[in-house]
Image 1 (cartoon, one colour):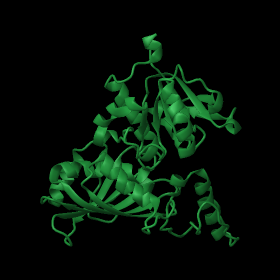
Image 2: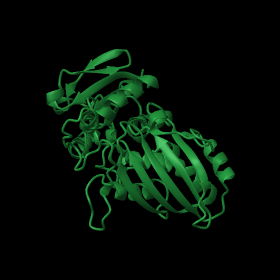
Image 3: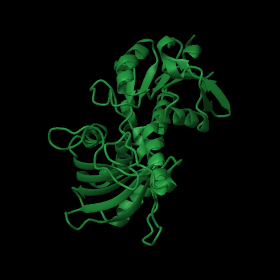
Image 4: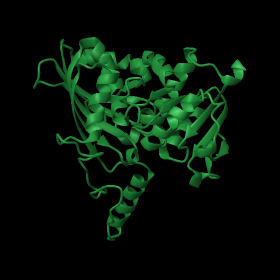
Length: 344
């Protein structure tokens, strides 16, 4: 007998991806329920070869639910995750609502799976920001090998990270450019088609954006509070897949060859690093894939013990839905939760 899983926000980009990944990985679920707001009730979403009708979050009884994958935004999670947790379901939340709460573990299974044991304080586990998730997957084995002192990262983030409306904006604006029509604004303050925007989330007092702040705080919480990190986050006209140019300074020497071997043996990473045209991975190739790809490994001669690399991942999968499902798998595989139907 398996588990009962609820997916909140099942009609959104990440929610749909969660349903797909649950089916792909043959997650041990006897029942999967698709939940969303009342305006989405009756819509159908795919779960493997099935179609599930969406039910309303407002009226759902979670008392028999084992795991809730939450992807409905921070405001909804702030209101509902404690209520759901109080009914005994473990909430794995994809929003920013709980990432910085000291009583809520922030987990990337390839990096800090042991942290899941802290879920019992609130029955909530947080997913990191999509740009953070792929970064720490790549940094973890390097940190173990040579101890990271400082990271400077520039991101090239796809529009899907801002939701379906942002994807629609890129499509409509691109079509308008090709048809010599008016390019209308939308989700972003600047045009996104054939442009890049160095602004994700709100601006903070020091001139950084909240997206950049998230990467700093989350990397410290997940990996090591001693790591210094500086980020510049940029939105680019790509539908799916985040890319990152990463410079790392280590305490101890590490060669490019050593780093390449360390990364090749690490979970969740594929190294594609041929020093020739096309010998690297772009977001186009990473879309629909589970791995975090590392390319362009090379020495950074501007600092002592420095390396640089290129990192790409599907932000809807490893950056969100896949990571949430992997957390659920850790809970089950480590015997940290028991299906309520089993217990009964």
